[in-house]
Length: 154
Image (cartoon, rainbow, N blue to C red; front, side):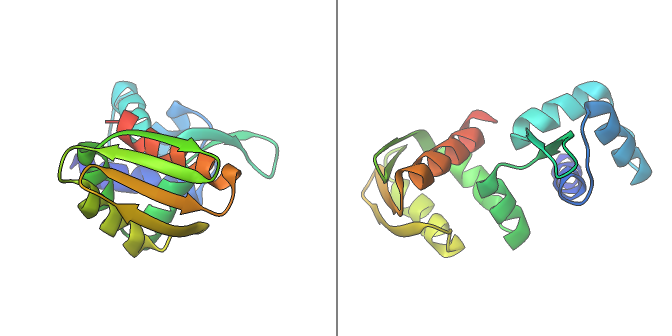
């Protein structure tokens, strides 16, 4: 039930301009789900939704870019492996270093490679560390922020 609700939330924030928790709760209700404000708040945190400025100048909820890419490709199962396996993420210049639990780096790296993420030049995985070569330092910072939002949200 929770997974289906969160899938619906991702679809709603993609399709509609939702600016408050109350608007999101009402949108869920229109789709047949009665939830409390506390549940909506928890889902927002777990999905790492962020407030961005829409084209009309109003704030609205949206997914971080990596999650947006994943949800559009139907790869939401990778959230679980990233949140379970990744310990920390940092970057230096245009290289992202992803520290994982022992033995998990290659599995996480294979999942990330399969996504064909934009601005990733290449990846290299050892036993517990992944290096991601990004096109620019800005791309490395964005990837770091996106990965951190996934591992912190759980």
